[in-house]
Length: 136
Image (cartoon, rainbow, N blue to C red):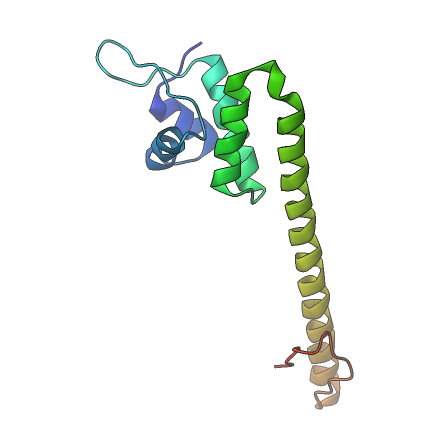
């Protein structure tokens, strides 16, 4: 069942501007239009939209999403290139997760220190996280 831009945007909680941008930059293929000029998203188009949203939500740069879409359009001969691109995207996400984990550890430490300070009336920093760590 085909969908309009409004239906796609409602389903995926994105703005029409975002969806049009994805099409304009090539993150999704050009969508066919009805005789009246309304975008007509097929099941295949919607799969491409889902992929673009998934990759962007994971922090994958738009340029990489565009490259992945371009490779998909070139056919089965690009399997290894697509795999390599996804591995690169995955490595970037793992790096982001590690950074977030470290920041979460720092926040947990600060919370624990403030909880102790509320009980004792004294704020004590007894740990640093890196050479540029600034306790505040």
